[in-house]
Image (spheres, rainbow, N blue to C red):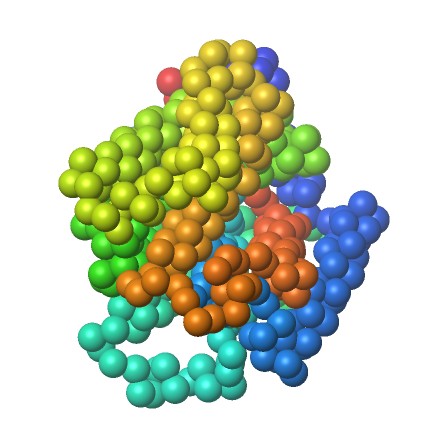
Length: 444
């Protein structure tokens, strides 16, 4: 069989592609230790959630003034990270950038994981989760909350389909090629492969439906974070009353998502030894994409401060002053400078776009992206319509409690668990697409 060299001068053939890309599908001792650690951590976090269920939201730092704390900040962050599947697979894929093929499935796995847990995050913020079904039974169509629930569920379903449909040929390959698998895994592959035979008509069908999904998910993905922003922007509250919140949230989502993909690319490349498929070129181009979306996000951040500051409304002045040089100024400047401006300036240096530095910079950006959501959610509530008076002293500020922090960590652990399981059940790089690319190179 003909062989082709990739840019890392590694000889590739169909047999090598299958061997390399199916090698991650095993329940190694290393993975068991990792998953056991995550499980133990999740159990501890769930204990704190049980404590919250028994004693109510009084165990949190939330109060009558700050009724949305780190739970809602976490929800907005999760929705943001979930948008990356649309950006990588749909936007870049439909434009025709073929370099995204080896990393598209990674982006889709991240999107599915964050979208799945986003709904759970909302439940953690509810004092009576047993009444969740009332939202569906008695919810008002005029409420942005109903819009948000609807679009989150729609996006999750489309993301699952976007991940699953291109997986079908690889699932069938796993069923045929892999041996020594647990019985449940063999049955899973048999069911999910849908009787795949690998003929030309089936490939055409998959590509056709995949293109339809790529088109459908773009408006839904834009809607999911736009509608989430409307939970804030539809109010008259100082700091949230802004018509730019939709594109502002979407641009910030792309920053968080790109950073998450870069981090996942690094660990997947190293742990599964996929240097021949996820190359320095992929890190370089993803880092450049991160620079681009960061520049757009900086533009909206400037607008967020400059426009209300120019109008000089008393309530806006107080809120902006608190961010720029007041109580929350340290966190605000760390998020803006250390988590956005400095990282994207570093990524403009070619050496900083290599795998290790790009991953480390992305970690800083992703952490800052979470705290940015905190800056959006919490400080604004400390500038209420009426002066804060005749309330306990603790109501004048907000500090997350240990149960809040533990429950928030628990949701992040769940995301890692979903990503870990999916990358062990299925090839993280599309096998059939890599083979297809190999054949195209041979014909050329």
